[in-house]
Length: 268
Image (cartoon, rainbow, N blue to C red):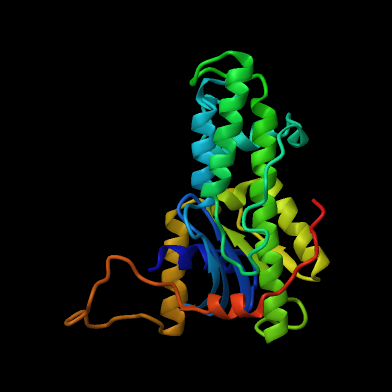
């Protein structure tokens, strides 16, 4: 069972999603855009070149010391960012959208985190506080970071949709975008992705939060999918080989980059 394949197929446990469909897998360890044309049949359109969005949100939350915030002490980093973002003004802290001039579907979040770290250092100096103390503008920074992550995800997803339509990789009617993984639990990010799919006449489907994060159900369901189709089922393990890190399908990201599709601005 491939961990990310399981995330991608979980939605079929809950909805009658037919192949092929577009999937955005966003978590603490991965960020992948792919076309799923069958069980274990993936075409990779793009992925993170450095760190994953969930990792970025967690690191920003730690740098902001949100564990010391009275409303966030029991939350994960991503949950704390989402919670405080509702109270903040993202316009107070403007951040650049990563890779805006790169016409592909790859992602990058490390540069965004560096931007945020510089903003935090500047604000700490202005407020005369030390690292580890809470800034008065933590909600504004949280709102800005969440917005920028969402915008970056939306921009790359929009290009993936354009590419898939151009190449005939998705159905002309009732095409579907599936968003899964821990970060797909973020309601603000879901709303932004909904904006993208609405403009593209597609349906957005996400598993419920309890099935977005890592869970045993998704692994079991992936096994059922494989058993039903006879894919990757070994009846004799003699001579079977093992890989510490398995690839996910075929990488066609170079074709996406070569297409160099320009996408219109997204208003979110």
